[in-house]
Length: 457
Image 1 (cartoon, helix red, strand yellow):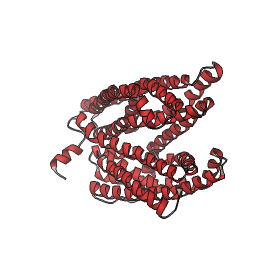
Image 2 (image 1 turned 30 degrees about the horizontal axis):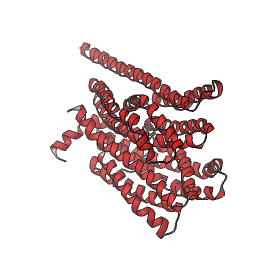
Image 3 (image 1 turned 60 degrees about the vertical axis):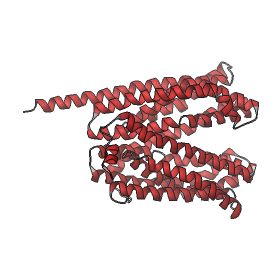
């Protein structure tokens, strides 16, 4: 590693904005390709048949529920590893990575067991068509068998992000997107595996991604990662991983809740909202990049004891979030009709999607603020509050607000969208207050400790 690269990787010094750009941009680009990867699978499923597309759609919902159990591996691993990267404790860094590797296999076996017991029943809850269920199970069964490759990729990516390396993860997502275009037609049309071919393609790509990131991580830390068990390390890692995983689960459940209430107004509103959400997710990719940058920067500086710099990172992340919002809010307001027409020709679907995007543009900075605050709290090892605010924002408040607006007051479809805006903005303000409070407590405690040490003879 050259001196310049070593300086870039040391996030405890140098320009915070430069580090945010260097870490955040590859992370954001990687997530764009990850989203495009999923769209590619949908396109190929549609080439098989409408039944195949329906099967993939319900399969995606079910396996996402199970894979959510491992979705906190990336952020949880990053939080624990980054602190010891910042304090230059190499042996502890390796210990965290190996224990996270061990937890990965444990969670993967648990996901496989739960999926074997409950996945088929859940598919039957989502469709009455046995042909659709059969195709969905073909896909889901294969993904469940190989779910460990998803989780290993998350584990190794989290460890690399803690070192300030998001480029490698971006690379596997970009290459995976291209490989998916090559493998899907091979498995579907040449080998005649149908929807199952989509799953085999994904499994091969995820296995290759995990292997590549393992090699990169080996070069980063000087030794290959292997599963390890240490009760204290597992306890601390799980305290970071599980709240993040449960937070992801609340997002999935929250989507079900919103669609349940929207479905009362017909199929077009559901389709319009679903397309609008997909477009919004693409526009929020910079938030995911900023999230990765904040995790790495705060984690290393927190571990090094640079608490004033931690506070500075948070404040500057909010400024970057404001800049991104200034760029993307007008896009949501003025270009939403053009973007919606790329997904549908139905005017009813387009109108709903456009209204949703224009309404939710008012909440865009709120989303950005939530991402920054959650990343900050995760990095300083305070993962429970993001889970609490996630449960309130995704489940408790929407159920109450939607029921009152629709059932109680008789308001129409668009009241749901404005309720979402209000809930996001209120949640973001609470997250801002709580995060600043935690930072001030950390700084006060550090000052008291320094004062006490200075007073000792």
